Amino acid sequence: MEYLTVKQASKLWGISERRIVNLLNNNRIPGAFKIGRRWNIPKNTSKPIDKRTAYSKEQLDKKVIVIAGINSEIGKELTKILLEKGYYIIGLYQQYSDIDKTLITSDVELRVVDYFNRDTLLNTVRDIHGDIYGFVFMEIYFELEDSLDFDYDKFEDSYRVNVFAANLLVREIVKKMNFESSIVIVNSIEAYRGSFGASAYASAQAAKENLVKTFANVYTEMYGVRFNSVVAGWIGGVMESDDSFNKTSSSIPMKRLGDPYEIADDIYLMLTRHKYTNGSSLISDGGYLAFDEQSKTEDLDSGKFYRILDKFFNETKSGSQMWITSTMMDNEWNEDPAERKFIQSNFDAADRGVKMHRIFIFSSSNIEIYKSNKYIQRYLSSNKIITSFVDIDELRKNHPELIKIINNGWIGIDDYALLVDLPSDGTSRGYVTMNKLEIKRAKQCFEKLKSIAVPLKNIMK
Picture (cartoon, rainbow, N blue to C red):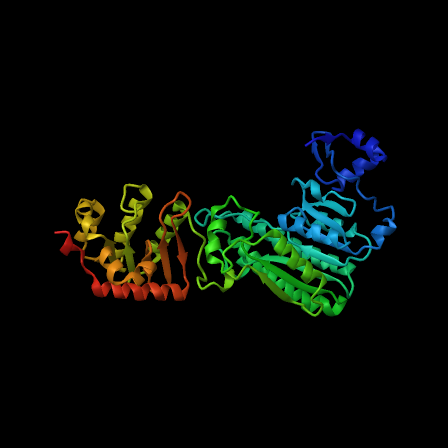
């Protein structure tokens, strides 16, 4: 990107260098930054609108929409829709982030903010003059977490952007609105389902959902402003390189990811239509929340999956029951350090009093291969773990319906959780579900397997 000096910008825009420096110090020039004593101003940045000068008649005739998070994929799509409909937009975006060139138009006023700083947000709202027709908050702060090495600072940062900034902007902007106005807060389905990898983000989304209802209670009567939320599901074009996004398509009844335009269109309709809708949430997720595998994590890579396995095995108390199927996948029963540690945790849990029954499922033609496996031999020598065998060829012939339920194997813990194996493909190793229906189905399958199983030692002679 090419940059201008203060002197070059002064000549280009026809305003004094002193005025430009004042604008820079007040974060009024999008994308500008300072190195030492030198300011760098993006060459393609539009001249800031001078709040001391009246807007043009054309701009005054247009309804003003404020978008916090305009630089997001959904924000850019919403901007296109609003411009086509004749609105004037004030777009807020986080300082130091790159602004998309397509947003730089005569009917889009870009303002750089710091969502982590209360004073800059307050100053930004104070600088907005005239009536505001609509406000959309879609800025997000998302960080994956390590539950075993938790970062409390990032957790608090998530709330500063996702909740505190939203709360402040709504409470200040609503004062500049009237009975025709509308506010839409964009949330995530994580608000309803939670998250194994981003507790701060998920709980912050839930907090915003409650804020929407609270704002409707407090401010609709006071100002006549409507408050609603659009709850987005898994959206493509945002993190397409993240393989978990693409794999999630199978858990969506519509069998595809959402499009940023589709969410933007929902926001537009909630913002400008639905005049009697207030304090409500429009869930736009392709049916994801209605899918019967509720409470399922995303597919986890090996590191995360083994850490969760270790946690479950270490925390399962004496007297609990573990019912396990092993399909002898390539990434099981090998010398991988994580696998060795996991196998040891099995015996530690059994020594602690956990009642464990493991059913090995493989072809009887491979018996000789597995006889030499030292880990299987260790299971055979244990008097605290029940081990059984079911021939997978017989299952395919006589009980094909069970094959689909067993899939790659799983670990059931009482009626509480199911830790499901996935074949290792370099990106995933398994997932965890607490869905009662899925657990019940797996447990019924296990009981059926028990009725046709034989002791493992009988076939390993």
